[in-house]
Image (cartoon, rainbow, N blue to C red; front, side, top):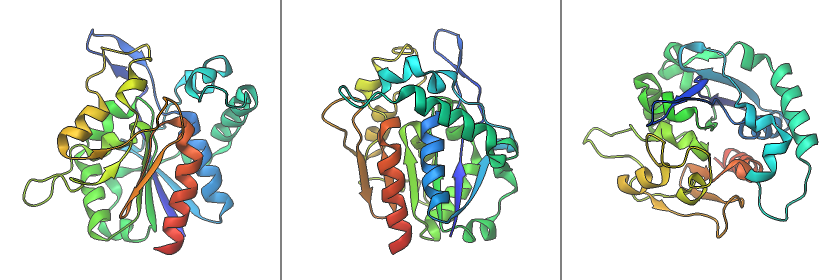
Length: 246
């Protein structure tokens, strides 16, 4: 099987107070699914807007920071995990030379068995603004492809509309990075939008874990969504089951 991984190419995020905040993709949300996808024998392509090399959010590979984005009482393997993330990011050729989303056509999307949209706050800055990505997702929906997103990867879904101007995921159960989790980041009150608020406004039936940072995954039809970085493993495992049965 063949999976297309879509990622942000933004290295900074423009905040409401004018700061260009260092950002990018979140390491765990790429490394963990990529590792599980390839271990299952799947071929993986990475694509970004313009084919630009994605930038890892430096806090996502800082073991001193990772303790704050996992559930209270979970195992402290932060130093080991951070080292694994750095190693795989450096060794993965698809990250160094991603495909350009603009070069992918309808037939190219038909060749993939599923699409996974990786997260990170950087995604807010480019994924919802790409007409080409919106077209790719429309093709994927029309072709009934399984689709998975995690954390801020859902920003790619915000601008989608069908032929009648409706959001194609209206009424779907889903999860994403929650408002409660945004409020404990250092960008609270300064983000261009709050993902939970936007998804709910569009008609999503939003769900989340009882406690912030806990893993939470929701499946509704062909859409698999994960709440936060700690959800990456469960999301990828669930998505693989979706691919196997689809």
